[in-house]
Length: 419
Ligand code: AMP
Ligand code: GLY
Image (cartoon, rainbow, N blue to C red; front, side, top):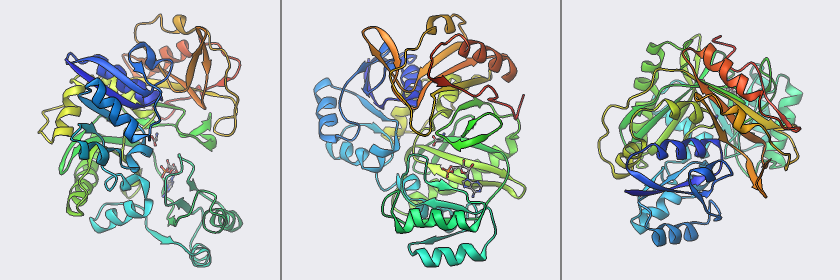
């Protein structure tokens, strides 16, 4: 029986821990740092996600068989490289491969070099040159800070003065850090998230999902990490998914091998079905959040076998999926994605969980003296499987309404494109 460590403490990691707990091969799960929900299925350990020496000491002293990394920051800082030096097994890409997410300029250059469809772009370090280029183009225009920015690095100005302001923030005032800016053409169409398990040139697709990035109903308000998700996505035909597998995910995986930085882990394609075909909006070097929370509950295969095969460079058989749809609603602290208060009491969880199709993944919670409280921007995701997406929607919403907390809000219109 195996011991597994999961790095991270959000809803994505709760879904990973939950999937691991269904594996007949796994008998002990640890999480660094985990959260109040994860604590029911795993031993939560207070070590920093980027304190690699301490994590490695812990893995050795506990005899952990495999470590699975959730968030992008430890990956882009090289956790997989440090594990490899010690001969420890890890599921997640190297620092060099994680650049597919950590540098938008790197991602764009790979896409261009290997003929992968994406928006036309130019990269700038100089404010005046960037402004000159934007002045010549049309609006809206897409401005992306080159480095990691916790989902806040993309701004889509409608006017020149707004674009000027954003370029100033990014290139003159270094508000996101020191770095370049990618200026991209604005594309339109429905977006979907296509995650694949990747080991070098071998690409194994997961079922697709759709996220809801805007904070408020009707897709209004600021961009967030994601306010809800569902899987499958019937408005995206299977032919588009096959196209994306053959013309996007596989060429990028092969390109990374050719560049000397083979990818191992989950390659996340943020894709858009534009009038001119499916194109890439972004890549992530890890499982998406909240997509993972609706995709992994549909996984029938043993996730430990998948993680192991990828980590060890072994071939993977067919991955099996449950056809039943899953939809989930994110409950977030009032004020998110801006500033918000923590510590509000959450009640009604047992009642929400009385339907056996309903699951709650914790995203930002803590327990104090036996009382469950909010401790983050996104606090929990309430999801349900159903006989249809409408049925999953209705059951998840019914469960959300049973949860009481003064300081939480949610969107009731998750899945509006397909219901
Ligand atoms: P990203 O963090 O790169 O996924 O960007 C955040 C959001 O900005 C995406 O989910 C899209 O809705 C939007 N976006 C990014 N790039 C483009 C683009 N080239 N055209 C239109 N929308 C975009
Ligand atoms: N849901 C988008 C992401 O994980 O970045």
